Length: 449
Image: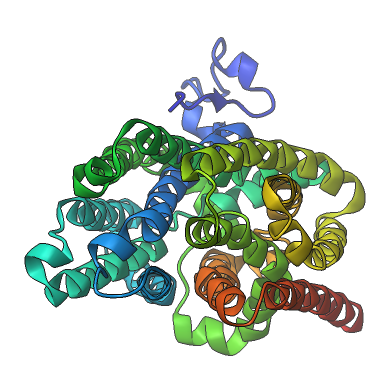
């Protein structure tokens, strides 16, 4: 991580050369603050490591787990079972947020973050070392489920408040830009994970890949988590960071109190981003599973196409910041929800349209995902008062992931396999409609209040 640049406040240039009126030098801490760009770097590093871990598991759920943990099932049923366990992390995530918020109140944010990332690394390394069904039978499935729950609890606990801090400290006219920068961790994580799996698929035999090759990305994820831990601690443990949090009142709030007083904002905030979160897995995990089951296309080639799509997503995230600062973040999110609704109508035609149609869906989907996801986090969390924003933003994110993305691969694959691809269109359309309804409700409530 780049070193933290300390910028002095007004008049600080003279403070290095002159003494104050009492004759004692001015301390740097009286004027110093962390620039929004430094906070953005911290957000990207933290989210990229988490998303890499996330996508390593997601891709393995498609290409590995049905064969090594559910060999007694047909491939479709094995993949659906793998997606059930995949969803466990999203169910566990809110509990992780609540548990680790309590730890932070008692022992501080550095202890909380260290424990959460240690649990994440331990769970990820545990999966890398986990014996398969051939060695442990059903105990392997139980252990995989427990380790997946551990990942979810850890991801909830890894909330460091940096996105909220970034939103509050970014210049008023550039908040969309800085919010977008914080979202770059998602495409970066997918690009690294997808490239690693695509390379291994292309260079290992099927036997080698299923025997030991699939474990390597989990080892890499563990190593990245260790690096990310020290990089994030280097920022969150600084006095400047603590002062900014105190100034912004970004401290944990009791979950009962925040649910009672801010429940409406949490629900609206989660639903407002539903279109983006639903599309998230419908262009990453679901199409890969569908290709593996119903197409003769090379999974390695398809993964490389998705990696290229993630590059487009990264560009779309950056562009979304420029658009949001002109149109407004909520207007941008609403417009993209409408475009996602339009895209939903073409899902069957594109996914059933051969390689050209599938590539078109992937590239268009990633482009729209970048533009919408760039503003999906915190578009309406400004509704939270300062006292509740730290915990409220975390719970809003947890709920958005759970409702919008946690079961998306399972639902989409189940619907397409048993009823046809048209039902995937309805699923994506429902997410877009919920987003538009939540944004409209939020606007109406603001006008009324």
